[in-house]
Every structure is written in structure tokens, then in C-alpha cells.
Amino acid sequence: MNDCIFCAIAAGRAPARIVAETERTLAFLDLNPATRGHTLVIPRSHARDIHDVAPADLAEVATTAQQVAAAAIAELGAAGVNLLQSSGAAAFQTVFHLHVHVIPRYPDDGLVLPWTPAPGDATEMDATAAQLGSTLAQR
Image 1: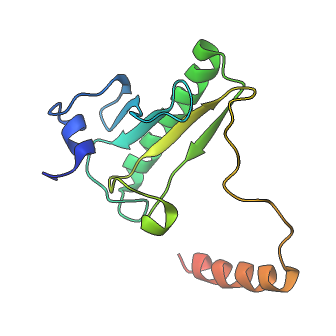
Image 2 (image 1 turned 135 degrees about the horizontal axis):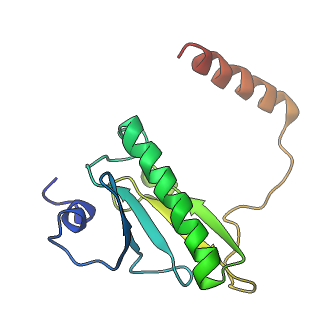
């Protein structure tokens, strides 16, 4: 896609601090890192979001993200890792090329959960599980 910055990075037409690459994926440091080592993992082929990506590309993105996460712990001394994938503007996606954030976590790094965990309504959760389960059982 001509106007996609991540496609330009994957094609070598835009600069990036690449940390890993495979035939299907590319991993590079985020220009606006949440923590030291914050990395984006993308499929080389353009896919707008999780709903648009080829299954083989998604599997390779997951594998590459796992490897980057392991390296963050082994090489950067991270105490943990968050993986974040946002699909759609309502989910805070700003670059519309599928990407997974690998965010190394360090004690006292200041990052907080984006929501406050609280128990859900059991009746609503039962209905939601049935609704999703019905759709997924048809696949």
C-alpha cells in the first residue's frame, strides 16, 4: 500500500531500527516507546487489522512477538512483557497496518492498566458467552 508507513518500512523505503525479521515479519523499535525496548511486530504484507490478516502471517507475527518478548527479558532485564494489538480506531489503532506492540515491563516503569478491573454482571456474561460461543461453534 503506497501511503502506509509500515509498508514503506517493510520495503526499506522508510527508516526503522530493526531488531528482527523473517520472511513474513519485521520487528522494529517504536518511535514513541512506552518503555525501553518497546517494539512493533508487523506482517510484511499489508493487512489493515486482525480481521484482514492472512492466518499464516498472523501466526508468524505471534511467533516473532514471542521471540522479541524473550529477548527483552534476557537482554534488557525486563521483569515482564505486555503484548498489545489494537484493531480499529475505537481500540486506539492509529496506523492501519496490523501490528503487535511488545512492551517490556520494568519495576516502577509508571505504566498502568488502561481499565480498572471489576467483577462483571454474571447474567450479562452468561449471555455474552452463549452469543460468542454460538458464532464460534459455526466455524
